[in-house]
Image 1 (cartoon, rainbow, N blue to C red):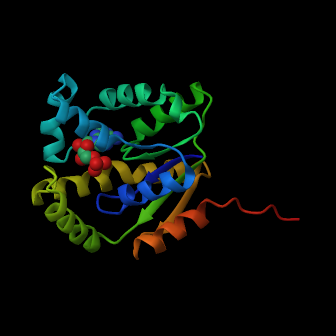
Image 2: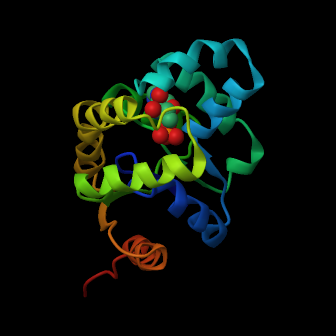
Length: 192
Ligand code: AMP
């Protein structure tokens, strides 16, 4: 299963991806985690990305595509993957499509987690206390939510137009949302 998880910051993508990874037995590829690893390692890429990430803006499409190409070249992605945090704009959605077609592994499905914005702010505030992420400051959170609505929301339509999108209610317990995602991923039985 090749799956994209979509949803604003705080929608629970990362948490659900961890569960889905166990269930589907495929790797979880989080571009945020890949970038944070580069920052922690102090690589040239990490040094370039860290200030942009702290502000809550998007790191360049070139950097992201390079990182993804190298991740997809690893054998563990041959049986599928869960992509979390990418694509974040239409250019990335196109680039992903092209890349996956080229390696003969087209996307199977995209799941959008739908969560009202008041709840997002509350959830991010909770996470900020628990994890202390550098980009969970109020100003960065505002920027990330705005980047999502301006640049990432159109990606939802990209997958909808290709018949790949399921929208899942992201309000509820971890188990409830997980069960909804799994049922959204079941193939619809052919009629007749
Ligand atoms: P996340 O953990 O997915 O919330 O990502 C944290 C930060 O990493 C984002 O606010 C961006 O600065 C950067 N980032 C992650 N994924 C992408 C992406 N696909 N394109 C650009 N920047 C990204």
